[in-house]
Image 1 (spheres, rainbow, N blue to C red):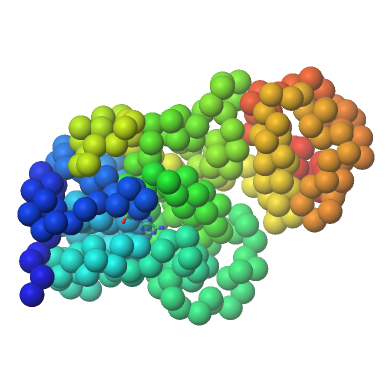
Image 2: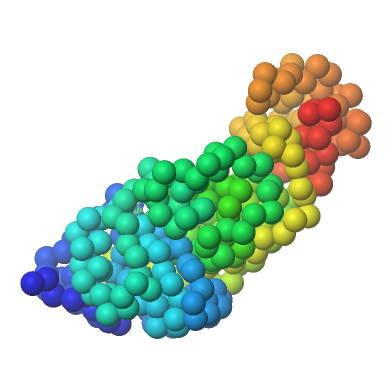
Length: 308
Ligand code: SAM
């Protein structure tokens, strides 16, 4: 029988070494070995008894166990089959409160996962056609994860732009990613990730976490970020496509001026920008503004204007 996983984060290192388990760099396996940080993440998430939580990359289960102990119902997606087996066994005492899917988060059906909690279920009728800003009840009100470095931003953006995105996300990411997620207009970190996330979420950096809190130690610091949904910038489905297309194009040329980026540019759905200067002027944006200067309200105005 496989030995159970360590109960406390501080035991993780010794546990791995004793069993010859070598954390994978490719899978971003930097395990939390600091109990204070685990407590801080769970406290920031404010998980309550009976609340459904999605976790990506439970690893050895430091966060998972703590959330289960708080009474949460945790659904976890873990790509590493060996860890998944060990984790299932280690957390068996939590019964149905814990469900684990040994899958690659980048390959699951998000429509199904976020609508039913089951990543393998057939997509519910019409899920793929849901309006992007539909005010539906998400299956998971919370998404709490220490995300793998290499694919963390992609996973977070995929989840957050989904119509059934959780109300609150508490995620640990690299500090520089956190800075980009939180960057206001007019700052050098402002980019595509900032505007895609901030259109739907208020972003707050809760805590900086040094490399010493992980094993193995990563090269850079991490940060815990809290994202809370808002409805300040609603857009229609078509406008969301245009918003994403416009901002993606803009931040690919972040040093250029807006008028030159969009001169004759082709956007989502084959929509072209016939006269970039006039389009910008109609939204009160100077032709020589740079993408990082544009506010969220102005990005949304540009999308609406182009979709008319
Ligand atoms: N939650 C644990 C902790 O805090 O100690 C582990 C976090 S570790 C930074 C990232 C975890 O994500 C690892 O367990 C890794 O195997 C898993 N992982 C990496 N890529 C993944 C993917 N595409 N889908 C699901 N899990 C993934």
